[in-house]
Length: 345
Image (cartoon, rainbow, N blue to C red; front, side):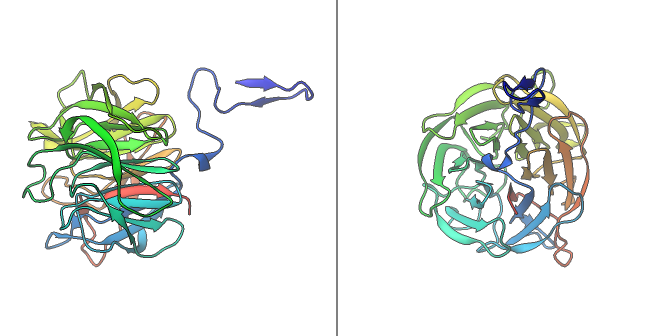
């Protein structure tokens, strides 16, 4: 929307008030994401083992990721978020399953101990603001298969610029693990997931407050593939996007899906169709974004774990394109059930 000054004749543009569309902020540092994407941990290699690797890349370009450092130990079914400067990753299937780790996104190196979740669990959903990181749902680290076992409704939070144990935030409206979770720095959206069977519910919470999350809609309301979990989620300032995941009933590609869906922040209704990933996949939980692009990495694409990375332009619906690959790590680079977040380099 053009706005005219009282002292200058030429108009200028308010990026937040453009008519007929939603615009990205001209001040990207106020959001908890940036142009450096990190991909952490997961299960991969031959034989399949829990990995400690951290890879990184520049989201504004395309190309392969490079080595950043290592987690404290190999772990899978973990998830993380950032405040654009510091990233935190929590939970996992490896004992004790309650560890929170952090790193400085601008500085290559290994992760450091941050504190502990309130309960040991794997398969948490994560979302961050400039001050807080939130971890929702999950399940006990002890059940054997993923998915499997009973989900939890616990929501924890940490203060990103400090270290220490997580505090109680509130509860989800349902018990879930493996939910799609991401935030725009103000609101965290959490959807799908598993509690013995995959689900299609979507909920939201306001990160700056504490309290229970609120249910507001469903995934894929007009189709047959809304009941799913353990896929990827990413956000920009105004849109939440999810891709891939494990279905509760077989589709054309078995229990895997290539579907991408979205919800607009502020318009909390059922999800809408966005497009498709390059192949059907589940366990592609290593997904992140900057202010423009969403990236979906790794996962199980049908008996083989992949290391390639897809990307979409979040404000433009359509199919995903090839970005590059995760680090090969001596031939063991393909992975799944990993974490991701982004920040400023």
